[in-house]
Length: 196
Ligand SMILES: NC(=O)c1ccc[n+]([C@@H]2O[C@H](COP(=O)([O-])OP(=O)(O)OC[C@H]3O[C@@H](n4cnc5c(N)ncnc54)[C@H](OP(=O)(O)O)[C@@H]3O)[C@@H](O)[C@H]2O)c1
Figure (cartoon, helix red, strand yellow):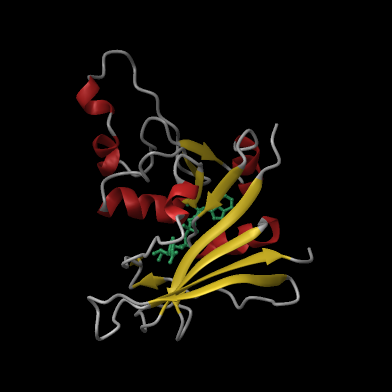
C-alpha cells in the first residue's frame, strides 16, 4: 500500500465562484504548461453520481484512460454476460440507462469506500460536483483549482477557501496570444493542507 495523496480538482468563476453553467459542466480552454494533465493521466478519478450521469448523458462517455470511481447510492455496476457483443460493451451503450454504470466503472456508496478502493495508487483526483466537493474537502491533501476570469451563469458555488487550513503554494495567470479579449484567461492555483 502506498501513501495516497488525495487531490481535489475544480474550476469556477473568479467573480462569483460558480462551478457550473446552467447545470452543465464548465468547459473551458485549459492551459497545461505545467504538465498537470500528465500528472493526472492514468490516475483514478472520483466523481459524484450527478456529475457522472451528466458526463454520460451529454458526452456519452466516461473520463477516458482512467479508473472512474463514482460515489452514488443508486447507480449499479454492470458486467456484461458473455453473449453481449463487443460493440455493446463500450460506454456509449449505456448512455441511455443512467442507473447502470458502464463496464469498468467502479461504484462506491460512500466517499470513504471510494478512497479505500484507490489505496494502491499514489494519487487520486476528486472532480466534484458541488456536493461531492463538500464531502471530500475534509479528506483532501491538496487543491488544484482553475479560476476562470469571466462570469458564469449558474447557482452552485465553490466554497470559500479557509486560509487557516489551506496554504497557497502556486499561482499562475494564464493568457493566450490568440485571445486578445481575454475570454479564456484563467488563473491556476494550488493549495496544500497546513492544518486538519
Ligand atoms: N467546475 C467543476 O470543476 C465541476 C466539476 C464537476 C461538476 N460540476 C458541477 O457540479 C454540479 C453537480 O453537483 P451536484 O452536487 O449536484 O452533484 P455531484 O456531487 O456530482 O453528485 C451528487 C450525487 O452524489 C450522490 N451522493 C450525494 N451524497 C451522497 C452520500 N452521502 N453518499 C453517497 N452518495 C451520495 C447522489 O447520487 P445518487 O442519487 O446516485 O445517490 C447525489 O445525487 C453540476 O452542475 C456540474 O456541472 C462542476
